[in-house]
Image (cartoon, rainbow, N blue to C red):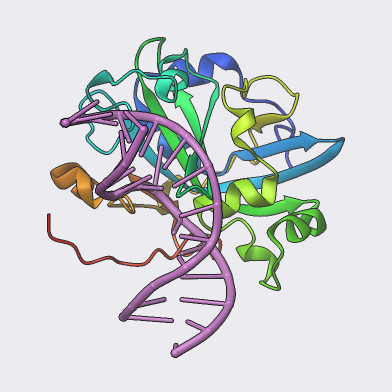
Length: 212
DNA sequence: CACCGGATTGGCT
DNA sequence: GCCAATCCGGTGT
């Protein structure tokens, strides 16, 4: 353990307009929750950048500003949590200045702390290392709900991010196309998904064949 | 107000 | 590999 382990990531960190840098840099940082006094921590090992307005894969494509996407237009540092397929919550890190709808999806985490609770939440017999594999499982394991939409990640309340160990695997990051956004056409080809190479908690998405 | 489909997952065939 | 689960946002009438 190193001295920065429990240090919270400050608000200023999220103001960086370079979302691709941030999506990389978030790898190795620690997602933390505290619901009902139950603390959970997990290392971020996989992210995806969603870069509105030009990115067709983003909910805020062409600056589409609605009740749902409003959170993404906030100043960097809050959480954008939305419901997918009517079943799964997904958590994003909103970044950049106000009115720039940049968001980074957390696609996988490695459980660090209170793993028993995570297992109970996910209701599975899977290995510990897989409890936070996939964006739906990230929220399930950590107890994150759409009601946490807009939470400030720079305040240690219910949902925040800590710096974690300082020797991130920067030279060990793989960039690949994002998952599940075939409708985004050429934007789906961009290598805006980042993960720690060979990390066992990284999601293994279905490869879907598509024409559209 | 009806319809379409989704930044997914896990169970069953 | 196939598919159901389950809700609601966005769009168009």
